[in-house]
Image (cartoon, rainbow, N blue to C red; front, side):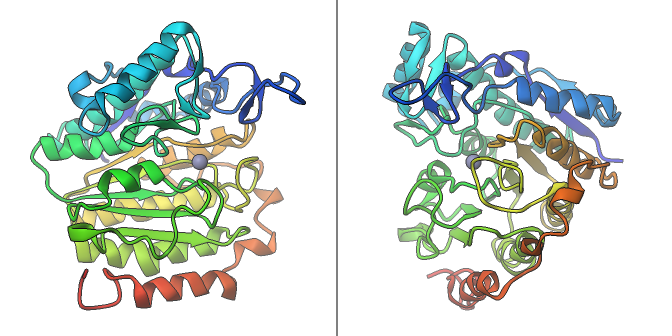
Length: 370
Ligand SMILES: [Zn+2]
């Protein structure tokens, strides 16, 4: 049995982008409803994991807020000041579609703090594996701007904190349905952080996460984007792992694996058009834990990112929690609505993306990165 840690903080659930509808604040033609990433949903996810008994398998850890020194591993001082100032006003946009409330600045520091402290604890051997149920999410946040609900880049700061702690090579896998432009940008010229993103082609940000974006300078070959066509599901995601992520990881030989583990690639998510189910997230987590065992002493940290289906997100988080704990797939009352759909099978137009990357990406095509 692995020694497991679960990082979460009540205040992360108090972050709220304010009155709006979907991902937009109230404005012309937009009647108030609710914005995504308000986190009664995430509290419900934690509640289901607790109810299932799975949370009892974890040591619960309450993180402390990230320090300025932590945040400056990735972010500029001006960016940190902007987030703090917007939050102090109690409302407003800290960047581009990154609305905040009074609690957001501290919630964002706690989200980063959770990821940094989980990573450090795993590197020190206090835990084998850790899961961070945090909000706001982080992977769109760039060094100098907040973006798309993301204030600070939780996983990017954790990767830099791992290096500060003595580790050199870090693999970051990002299976959020959107492209993690912020993580990519933080490490684009860095050969010591391999960033792999599996996302919906052309979704968000626009024209971001193309197969041709493979890094620059000494970082060439250490960014791997897998933009799957809309409608991809269980088999396409697992094929991306076996045909691209696993060989790339073996070529890279990481000392630590971090996963930006959004669950918005599910077939019930309003922000994406993918078809993943709880079985997909369970299987991907099992595979990444096995890869960590094979390559880096089992050291792996998962951090929540996107996930906007009020009803399905708890089941998906529970599936990840079960897999991380070495337990079988938990019950999924919604599975029947997705599993029979044809998008769950690997289709030729999806396989073409994998074939292209397997034969053209510098880290995979033979000869090593250029
Ligand atoms: Zn997302």
